[in-house]
Image (cartoon, rainbow, N blue to C red):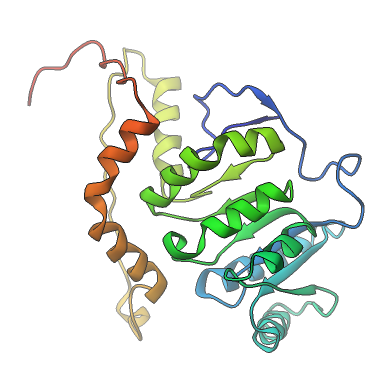
Length: 255
């Protein structure tokens, strides 16, 4: 396996660093949990916990825990998801950790082989978790859609992640996946020279689903901050990509 610190693990990226499988029991101490979900009481965190509950029915050997600031709220999440899915989650460990407490973050990360960070907006709360994961030699995954955070973390921590031999994977399984899959499909099946691809997205929300807000508060907050700081991205990307990408060929006529 190889490490590439980017928004997702790209099929088109050359990777140069040997890293360990998150589930290699010959590398990690037996005491480490396979997975810890941090921010489990939030909107995204609850979905992650429920999905882990579903998966664990078929993969009984996976050990996992949830983490956050408030123990009573974490217990409540486990109880509700346990009842909803008819699965006993009483054995799932609860870890107390706070993004403002570096020691607690390191203690949390040191108990995991993989940390799933659901605590956003990542602009405000993501970096301490990334750093703690690298320091603990723990693989890190999040669902960030914040370009400035994603690219800043790559600039600041790529070398440290390589030295630690861990993955730092942002925007994992996010909306870039359908687009990437479409491009790969075209590459494999298009008989001519594939120069570029235009993609379109259409969303529809049933009226019966409009009982509350259409966008989660944390998602909306992240979007506002990204728009407010959008003009900072060009300078950031010049640092990350000092060489210009080659032009697409053959050159297309203007439309």
